[in-house]
Image (cartoon, rainbow, N blue to C red; front, side, top):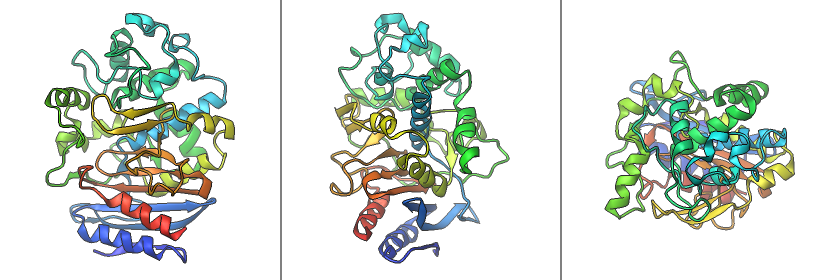
Length: 366
């Protein structure tokens, strides 16, 4: 399949790495890189759906790449004085005090240490309010702040309710009003069915939590994800894309996401001190449920021991958020770089080297 787009001189190795990805894929992908405010890599190829080629404007579901978008919104609200990571959640959301959570700070919710990785009752996944209410009443699995474990879906319910309590708005509205419209980003949280989006497909053998071998904790993971990634029908449904699921429902282009991180890195969205607060280490260690090495800021993933954000010497200050199936979005702030890899072919983490190969080629180029 043909690779489309262009790279600036010096980035030819990135194009070669992307060509290898497109040659091997059964779907499509795009990779965008900005350096100091200007695009230096814009590549795309493959198919967005059967018989539909991937184009420069093809949008894809970002899955947990959405969490980086939401973390950006929360950083903006912090800069506006509406949200304080050091304050107790109950200052904004009094009902959260139930079941021993009265002293939990906002930072523990955002850094995946609050101990609420799933919702106890079996509620509709797309109902933000019902799930938030249930979590407010729920007892944590551990003393908040003592363990870190990825809150795959519940991060979204908790962040949505916090944002609503301090602004009166849902996160879809905030993404539109604070990010998409003022900065011309093709990015949505809550996508109408009339907006074309690439069709997601699972690669053969796709599975989640590939670091996990314990079958008892595997059942916890299944409870966390609620079967969302088990079926193309579920993750491709207009209802899923239309719901404002802050943990994984945003839709956007690679260019929009790379530009978002460029704006964030360069201080155009929040002051430097707020970004520094959001991207310093708030939690790290081995995931208490998934056995995967983790390192989090306030909603952002940070450079980790397994190279999620490139080679070890690429940028120790790297931050962003990855997404199920292979998406990778973030910034190398000390190098003035931001990037986004989007795809509609979901591959298991232990066999997926696509984004890593692109970041290695990018590192060699700079």
